Image (cartoon, rainbow, N blue to C red):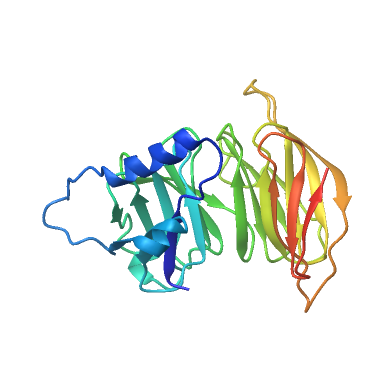
Amino acid sequence: DQSLLVLNPGLGDKILISDTDSMIQNKETSEPAGKSPPLSWTVCEDDQYGEGYRFILSHPKEITHVSWHGKGDYFASVMPKGDSKAVLIHQLSKQRSQNPFSKPKGLVQCVYFHPIRPFLFVATQRYIRVYNLLKQELTKKLMTSCRWVSSMSIHSGGDNLVIGSYDCKLTWFDLDLSTKPYQTLRHHKKAIRQVSFHKRYPLFASASDDGTVIVCHGMVYNDLLQNPLIVPVKVLHGHKITKDLGVIDCEFHPTQPWVFSSGADGTIRLFT
């Protein structure tokens, strides 16, 4: 609904788990003067703390998307109906939130941080805007040629991204080449719900309402003169279409060439 929950799930290394909690408790208290924060942070205690909850961020409208910065201190939330607060950026170590935009430039679908540089990608229905967070200015505006963007994923190198749309198109952008699509793929018969790059392998996947996940080989070369190579590799079937909805989400394993998909049929499937 309108709450964003920050959890420490207690998985993995015990030292990491305790270091995370001590970092949260020893917050840097430096509030910016004059401005009231866009929302308040509620610190979880007692029973909630024992279950792993650390903070609750109550938003004024429904949240549809959350994404982390690669270094893990910042995360962004999207409220499409939030008007001027449609995109908020939160800092974990200082426990404060910022509103980077005074006016929304359309209905925001999702936001992602650049993996290396201080850029923020903001997807609205028809455009992707790339903002420089340090200079606080618009760097690029990408023309997607789609009617309604549903999802995007950024290559680990940071110079390429794929965009899925509800009008069945998958578009690849090479940011060094142009603000227009480098290639448009029309492999899916119905709306694309999610696209995802693999962190290590030259692979990307798209999940669609036609009940399939299509995995493509997307090779990005270090030589700037050589254009990316995009080849469809495999169509994965497995999900049943339920109430006209197919595969809702797909995500690659961080190290293995495996893809997880979740469908409207209530199942999560793993393809290897």
